[in-house]
Image: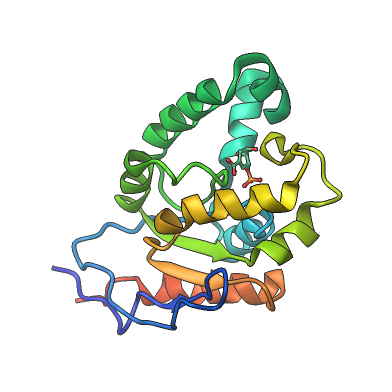
Length: 205
Ligand code: S3P
């Protein structure tokens, strides 16, 4: 059975009000970690960090929103407007099932994708699941000038961010690694993800 280097479950995040402590644990040695899945709220930098990590590892980069948009031939915003959120979530669910066959891929997931137990479990069956965390204030700063996220088309986007973040926090917290992005550049976050991925590789026998 494979052995793993040292402490793997590095929770580097802070919560809404810096409540989550830095904790360490171990990734189960029976896990088959062939990929990296980046989860986390909108505006936490999953795509930029994911591209950097994929480039460094010479892995394929895959963004679930990009795949869904390409297949639908319309934008996420239009999918929500024309078909509704439930259809979008179903397309996400089906894509997650396909991802189980991938190797050497860095997967950037839509912010709501892991808030579905089956999606989360499926990702963990083949990926090191890394959550990029950010405070609601930082998220708002990063997304306020963007218009492509239908869930933030709300009269009070800041309240919406807090509401969604609170509802999703239990799912995000289940990640193998939690990285607080509030005060880190995308490059620093990418280095942290790479470090955790290397630590999760089995020691050659
Ligand atoms: C969503 C996040 C978006 C996109 C869709 C729904 C969410 O992806 O999947 O707008 O539910 O948080 P990003 O997290 O990449 O912005």
